[in-house]
Length: 188
Image (cartoon, rainbow, N blue to C red; front, side, top):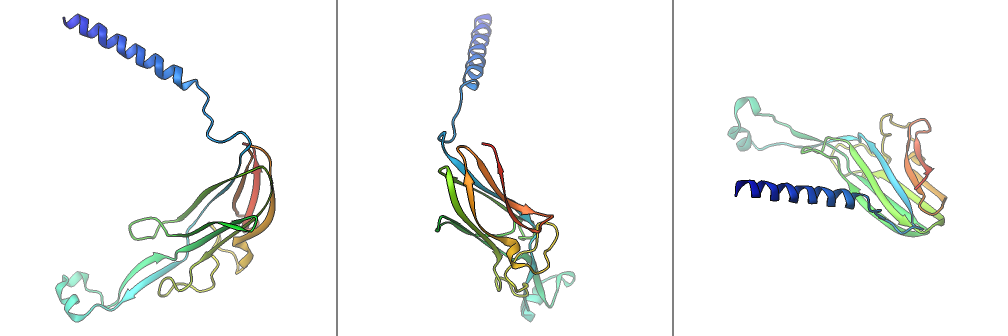
């Protein structure tokens, strides 16, 4: 009886393994054959700001002595607004916040927009939400992913015609040398 169970289990395992191997060879099409993509991908450290408030004397009294701080400040990264337009139509409007429990990690941008092949006017704007945090820097334009630009507001905006072929991916990313968003073309 025990031997029959082992033989049956072995047969089932072999059949399952063979089935998985056969299925792994099937072609998978995730997009239509003529579809192209506009991909946005970059990261930045962001601008630091602080949320500060004065705790009441009662609140301070409830805290242990070593935790009493007359100016309770929580550091945060300023949120950013991402706006993407294609051919005069708005396709993405999003507010991006820094990752992490205290919102002090980098902000990651990753979006993919499916488009038919051809010429498309692409407008991307990425800006800090001024006034979003008390003490946050004003100005509206984000720092570079690693090296902050020197006040050039065009560094985080593009508006250009992008030609896409079938199954091609155009990547909008941050170019550290040019200190600006740029469009790179690649295969599909």
